[in-house]
Amino acid sequence: MFDGILVVDKPQGMTSHDVVDFIRRRFNMAKVGHCGTLDPIATGVLVILLGDATKMASRYLNDDKKYLCTMKLGVSTDTQDAEGKTISDRSIDGIMPEKIKKAVLSFKGETQQIPPMISAKHYNGVRLYKLARQGIEVKRFPNKIHIYDIKILSIDIPLVEFVLESSKGTYIRTLCHDIGEKLGCGAHMHKLRRLASGSFKAEDAHTLEELKTLNMSGLKNIIRNDNFK
View 1 (cartoon, one colour):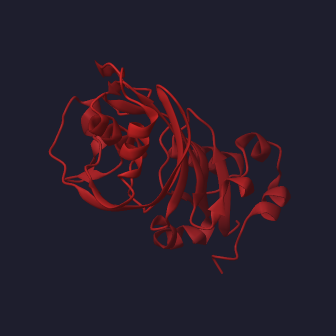
View 2 (cartoon, helix red, strand yellow):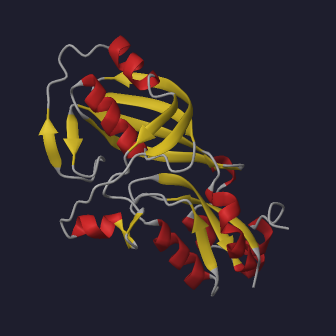
């Protein structure tokens, strides 16, 4: 059994739990956990804790995050991302790049955000996404979040690509939805990649394809324990 941290580059289409389950089965490990859920649509940095490092989860759950996001204007969905059902399709005529920039940058700083129904947040002990699957919507209260920085990389209407750094608990899908509402045309999260979680960065992450080629000795060589010890 190894104790330490494995930084994984989560592929699209898998849940964070799917990745944990893959590592548990691939390396025959009983104690595997993750810090900071990534939705199936998202890719990028997923911090995996192995062995006794799972006891240190609270240390990493509060880490700030960095994302690369592509937002699509004009279409709102029931999940606030590209995998959801379209609930409104509004005109984007007259929405110029300068107006988009102003709306996006207005969310920089401390703000309030209402968690989406499709989220892992608990309501009376039940995950919100489980209630959403039953067609149940409950009242959610806003959480305080902090967006430290937003940089717009490109605007190719209806797509807007930007990088942001934010506090834990920030829902990027909800940010896209809120930007769309501020613009009056609606929007949803089209793509998302987590570039960093605390000190763990995408360039240091290992793909599942790479992990499939490793034996236990190879796994030991890529496990990080500098922050754990």
